[in-house]
Image 1 (cartoon, rainbow, N blue to C red):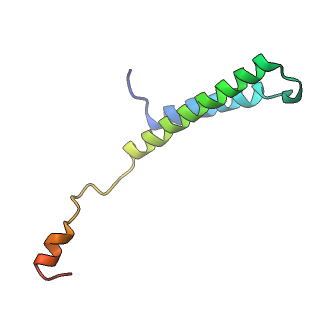
Image 2 (image 1 turned 90 degrees about the vertical axis):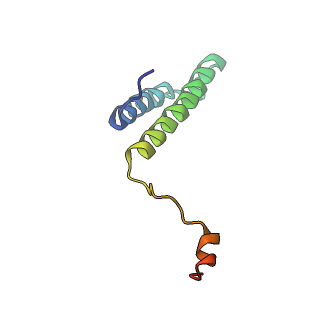
Length: 79
């Protein structure tokens, strides 16, 4: 499956979140099937949010330099 752009992941999450909120209307009178459907949608929202998080991480600048070994710093006298 092709990776979505960050904006596409956010849009998918937001659209699904709005639909999920609509499915919650009338919650006090939901039967077991309706409750299960809403809970399933919430679970899927969590997956979509994880996709948004991962997409953000992949598209944001990060420290790409190699960390300096603390043992090396101690050896050269800069501890």
